[in-house]
Length: 221
Ligand code: DX5
Ligand code: ZN
Image (cartoon, rainbow, N blue to C red; front, side):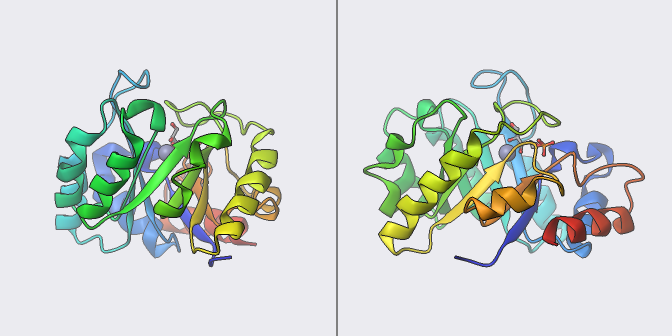
């Protein structure tokens, strides 16, 4: 398995101080920046686009930016995110008419490609593309909002996808997103995840570097 990665979701950051929030969470020990893109169409919420990704790069962020696209259609926005400095671009197969083509599109722009499975999406969607992607992102809540409770059936799904990944012999990441906190991360890791998104469990009051470092340290433990 690959070394564990903690990816704070900036959905729960203070957007009025985004650069400072990202600096603090990275200084506190985060590995990646999880960047949730919602379009009020594929999901019932509206967030941030490539301009904000570009602004974080211009601000000096060098850590991997893990872009989670909850948009439909997907392809049109991929080149913009690649130009804006995205490292990984993940999308929901339901939002792309040609899943394999979207994977190729992302990789042809120099980014790693991830496929996102909603809680109700069967793992069969991975069957003919798993070897082509760099990351599988399992949603452990329904996409659209931070602060929801972890859906327990995700643990079974993680074990299943971990076995599928291991069978390929390739270094494909298994990321989990939604309701992850210091109390359940142990079980999630034991089920096979190696990348952990957490929004509300990290970006919490008093919103200091120390508080973020404390949350991240407890999650790593
Ligand atoms: C939900 C987003 C998540 C969310 C996680 O659609 O994809 O990344 O921000 O937030 P928490 O950790 O609060 O569930
Ligand atoms: Zn996300």
